[in-house]
Image (cartoon, rainbow, N blue to C red; front, side, top):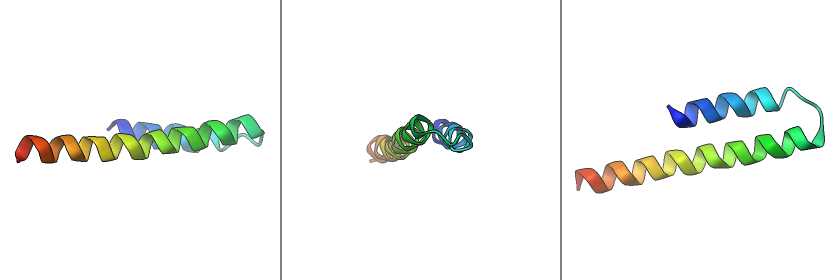
Length: 48
């Protein structure tokens, strides 16, 4: 759920044409990827 929200925020940030908006979108997308990866690791560790 958190990753989906971060991706939605990334898409909203990309609607702006300014450099700072693109940099924010890049950071948000990176955070979404790390969040999804972290949740996957926690789930695997919990089930192992």
